[in-house]
Length: 541
Image (cartoon, rainbow, N blue to C red; front, side, top):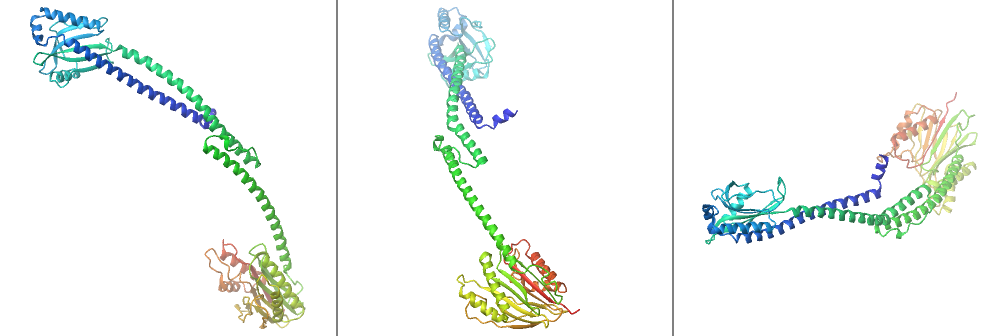
């Protein structure tokens, strides 16, 4: 069964099997056509010669004397002469029967025998003069009618099957006429057709032998051609394709001369071309993958450097009980352009900053780190937030060939009094929660973003915080976070989320706002960096 299934799925088996089947069908068709053509041709030849024999025999009969022969009962001399002629004619022409009948024209259903001659080696017995008989079948009755009424000049009947002891034969019927051209009788000649049967058998045998021989020769030649031009090239192509898929290495070139068949030749050259292109692709992919891995490693290192450049150990000031602070930065890419920073300038002053650089990725990260360093340096030399931002803007504009900019909110909180001095360079307004109240945005006049224009001067604003108050600063990645339908999170949702957790610690507030944003965004990819920072002034114990 496995061998049979394998053969059925074999290309060579199917092609050669189809050819053999075609040759068999072709041979049977040719034999059938030849058989019927041979038979038809043989019948036409028999019909023509038998008709001429019948005309010759009919010419010897006196049509005016048909009724007289019956009355005289064969005693007339001319009857005996005619009878002798017909007997000799029947024997010499190798006929089975020669007989003359007078048909009952009332219904053509019976006839009377006039002359009846029987050939040698036949199973027939001669009829006597005046012997009457019913017409054998409707076919003969129809011919009798047509000849007597001069619709046809002769009739022919073939008998090759269902003959009993009689041999296959042809019967030809011609009219016997009187001087007035009236049909008075019919002369019938029955001629054996054994030659037809004997001739068809060797014909069919010869056709079968020729067909088998030609089919064998054709199968051998076609098989050789198909094997050379189809099967062998396709097997080579399959072998090479399997080898290449397993090894991914350069192999033997198939070449366009693998076959004279254009499609197979094109397939071979396509395989060769595919291998070359695939190997080039693999080499390029290997190089690109290695480069990507290198870049990935460098980005991971850059992300680690960026993360470590921001304060990320909490609690940040475990020995201080007068305030609490927490911050988080989630970049949209490996590295981000947002930043935050906080540190104690002295025991009573806490510096807080948050910024958002235009763009994303490595350039934004580098710009962010430079800006963050400049801001921290400025605060440490005891300048006000406005003066720091003014100086930072000037220094960045001097070397900002990439035309990048950054929004910054910078504040210094005096912990003992709650006095917060801040400056805003195009950044989002902070949200403040008063003790026993809700978070609300603190609106103020913004300065121009840092890096946009030289000579810009920024201005300080003052915010008073009391014990139990909280301040929340953020980048636009929070309100502008979008879901799959391009709907934004908005400031209203941010304030609503903050107020749900207003009585919690800064860390819990930030975790709550991040959870709200993530839930809103769902499966949508993060579009922008998300940075938040929250400070709480503790109540006196």
